Length: 426
Image 1 (cartoon, rainbow, N blue to C red):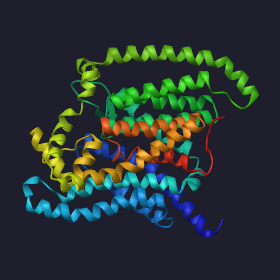
Image 2 (cartoon, rainbow, N blue to C red; image 1 turned 90 degrees about the vertical axis):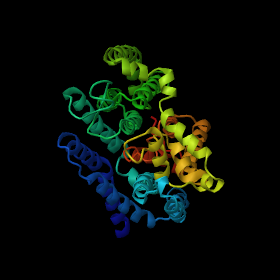
Image 3 (spheres, rainbow, N blue to C red; image 1 turned 180 degrees about the vertical axis):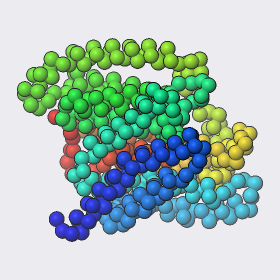
Image 4 (tube, one colour; image 1 turned 90 degrees about the horizontal axis):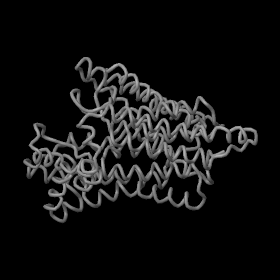
């Protein structure tokens, strides 16, 4: 290994430390100061700016088409179109254009794009650092914080102090947290199947339990679907390559299957006994279908009234945030939409929507083709992540600006970019 490669590996190792354990610790510290001490400190933003700068520096050393498509084209789009937004915003100040809101909104999306690109471009170097183990521990740290907060009562309630069920610990957004826990559970499952053992199984179960305790639909429904898939794979498909392990594992399969059914029944009983009227209504089909309609309806109205050039290139995120806030009669000047497709189409126009969404649609199609060509658990997990990501982005939001889930999504997508199948199935 030459000195330059050694230096790059060192830089990657440091970035991984910042992206995974350090970022979670910083989020918890920031949340603690906000909730318990009523003091806001911008350490989360400062850390992620530092991570973003370090990642961009490494990406410039290895320019490739995927970097240009996923990261650089969105940057160029926003830079080129921003003067148009500023001019129209200056001519019509009542529309609510705000450069600060634009920068804050785009920086979160940019962080996601850069991190995903970083994991793809430096996949081989990252793979030497045991990413399955790192992400499993990452998920375990988050899960531990959620479980401790649920037991002790400290931290943020997911819905309200007076009603609802679940805790966010000291993290900010419940849906962000739920999606992160869900994908951490997926990666932890891969880690478990790469070398089956009790310790790895307990890590996966602990992460999965915390998804239930958050109390969001994304976390609860998502983890129920994933655990069902994982158990069915374990019982009906999975078979260790080692003959002795295979014979021993046959004995445990019925126990795993019936154990899962019993645990599922107990979880349902626990949830039903813990849910109040608000939560029971929230999980009805009608409520789930209309959960975001209060926010998306003003967006639909906003888009329908745009001129063709505004529909093509948007008027900026701050303008649509302002419109939604005014439509809802909010005390605040701006209100995010929490439905990523509506947000991107309304804020950045049709062209910007395609610029941001097309890579993620491509990842899902690529994952689908891989799985169809030679089905295995790893490729199914990749398909699950890439497809559910777009589904949640459409229905619930909190995807394209989710800084916590970015490295997990990036790692899963990177598995498709090896020269041959990079499966952990044994």
